[in-house]
Image 1 (cartoon, rainbow, N blue to C red):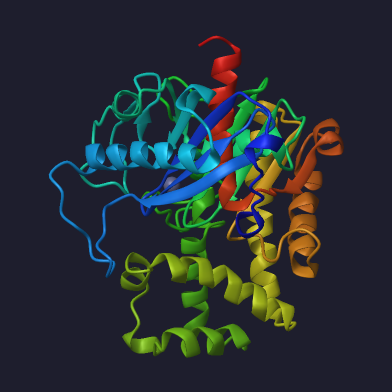
Image 2: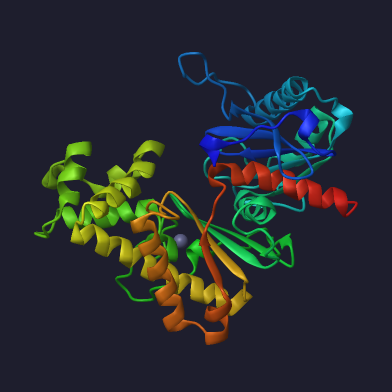
Length: 375
Ligand SMILES: [Zn+2]
């Protein structure tokens, strides 16, 4: 969706308008959205300011500086779209954790050094002069999918985003589920393998779903295959791209230093080798699907969702693709084998459809929901 985003004109839009802001470690996505989830204007700003050569510009208070630049970008967007500030009734802001969502506060966000205990909601509200709703980015992505993506019409649904980690957004009775400590939906850390030699998760614990169904987990598994005598074109593909020789290669260093491009590329590499018919690559995709299915069954028996969506970098071609559909069918097979029949019979299992736009659209949707409910 991100590449094919449709921007509609103000004349075709339905007021009132909302601003959706999706704040990540690299960039801040800002969309002005109408009452029908149509985007009127879209822009991004760097989370940390950079000069024109891409070098970071040191600032005294990076969080407050980012909110000031975000606020300026909102007003620039309003001017481009031909809107007045009074046309916007509410702003939705979503960020990664850890957070205290009711307090509007970031607590200890891993990818935002210097932003600890920052009262982000009120700071943005003060800068921009708009009322601001605040939520988690994974929840917002689920909310966006429910508003105008694959989850449309499902009041009880879950979005699993398979990327560097495994993100989970939960919608219960049409609302995002936050939990008591703003840690609801951390299902990437649900245990799928309790054995002593289970894989190590990004959080340091063993056996969590994220260790089996994320790009970092995948990097470890590809590395392990390099050390074996297994015959697979994946080995050649990996070495060609990253130029590593087995004995000099340290997987932990490699994973720690993986940039965003590498993280996005690894699942793509696996997908491309699977497309050529490489048996080991296909097996690895099937194994990912199996673990993911096991993780989903736990969620089904806990929350009884109507719909589960799978999105992110690890969808292996996604909807309509031969490998993508095989992946989804393998997840489905695992669910059918392990879940209560009534739940597996009625579950809608599908790929997410909004891509990287789900966050800002969902943020606007959360703001809209608060506005309609008079919050
Ligand atoms: Zn974990």
